[in-house]
Image 1 (cartoon, rainbow, N blue to C red):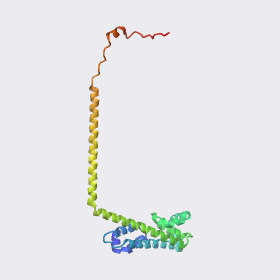
Image 2 (image 1 turned 90 degrees about the horizontal axis):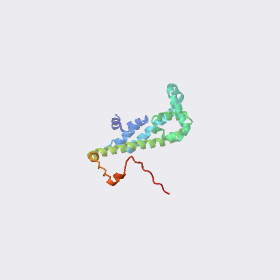
Image 3 (image 1 turned 135 degrees about the vertical axis):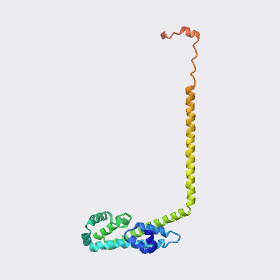
Length: 227
């Protein structure tokens, strides 16, 4: 679906998609730009995504700044989210305005919350521009690199398949050899134990006749007294 929109409408589809909050369409556009005959270049795709993301955030900010009360009257269920955004702004506004679009579900909420806050419009525009550019470059290049990697994998799929089957064959041989060795060792150990059990016990040699004459089992042996 998104691939069809990008291939037919190009940068306009990417601009609208990122205006409405779309990391997915930017990643797909980056992957399409890495194809051998792309309908768009990665540089212009990043610029289109940057412009769409920045425009969407600025529109939400201006709507809340100029028509905030009217907006809450129409959408009262948005108030808890806006209050949460204001709470985050109080903790660290600079870091939040630079990175909020990287966290799913925060983009529109933070943009509206800034409109209700006392953050100057120029400060939001400056930090929002930096964040939008970082975001566009990051996700655009991620899609581009992923697309090139998949293209390289498809082109060399036969080599990878040979490597996989070779690794499976070697693993099977190692498992077979290990089981064979274990069986041989166990068989030898069993034979050795069986041989030890069957071996007759050697009889004790008889006592000499002189010793038998003087030795009586029931006779107590008294120790010799020493002076």
